Image 1 (cartoon, rainbow, N blue to C red):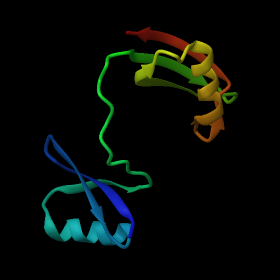
Image 2: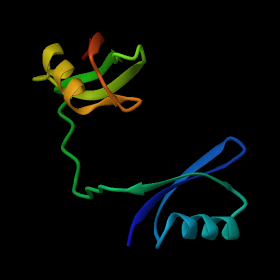
Image 3: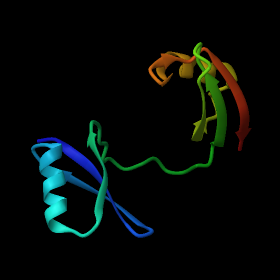
Length: 117
């Protein structure tokens, strides 16, 4: 049975809940019947790792800011947290070009703004 991430909003309050159900329509129907909060987002969860997280040894770049663009003059800023110390600008640029897209188009240009430790 699929698992869903449901975002609910009312006023300034936002809550995220996880639920299993047969379909998105079933989840929406459930929450619309149950709560006064508005369902603002339903996402199907494709991957969950419930094992213990690693111990924080602070050996990473805490924030890395990057601006990427594609051949269609579309750009986007990405902010990554806790980046491994073994990842340098060239490796990060290659990872972005190989794995990430902007509006369904491959990234062709990467500008590394900042590595902060």
